[in-house]
Length: 326
Image 1 (cartoon, rainbow, N blue to C red):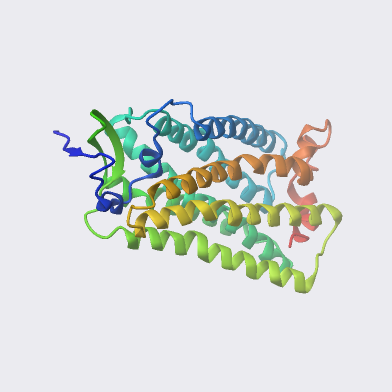
Image 2: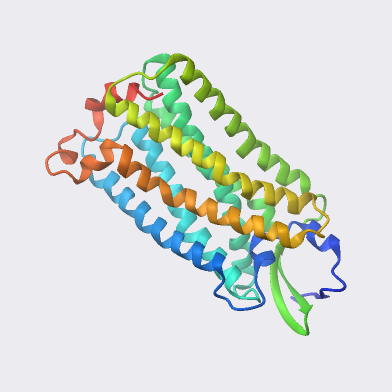
């Protein structure tokens, strides 16, 4: 297939170029050295996040011989989602920023477009499901049936997998002539108005979870904490996870919406914001294992001989503790 060529220079930049919802990757590609601060930061975060989430995953899998509680299952789901973010999405972002000309071809372009959308859907849904599970336990003073938990986890993955499909259908690699050199960029060329798609994603997967989390936090302040000490630590863990999502994903969504609605004249400022937003997004996925190591007793117990594999780290013995959440 013949790739169209577009003449792009610093003097004849067409603002409508940026109205096609180009992904962060190709807009952030630097024309100088491939070792940029964003590349270094995201690479370090990705390595640390991969190690932390892998250790957390192994601990959860090996430490609960008698099975997982509902909270364990939701935390396990969050860890798996974060592992996808730091092990697939982050390396693709690094490749996109490290090379002035996009090197991965059409299939790689679709992957580069797909996984940021996947993370922006799966991460908030995973965190919100954990908060809602804890809130439900506090309201009804009973655990959710296990089939409800499995249904919720399946729903999260089905939605997160399918939402990015419209974006990757229109993702393509385009040849651009800039500063006398022919480079390839990966972007999403929407046939119509891309603003609707990005705005709906923002409303459903950031604004609504944010409002729901705030409402639950306010209600918790009114009712006060409950349950044993371990349950209160789990409360703190869930609240911090929710707060991290709210704070660290905001620049990501703001930059994305600005690219959709902007004119293109403030491109450099938006690129700076989007770089910071990307780093915060990956940092959010890398910090959760550290939080679990500090606040989640059932995670630590997996490394204590005689505790994790004897059922004290999960199963029916944790019923009282789990009901203390939120």
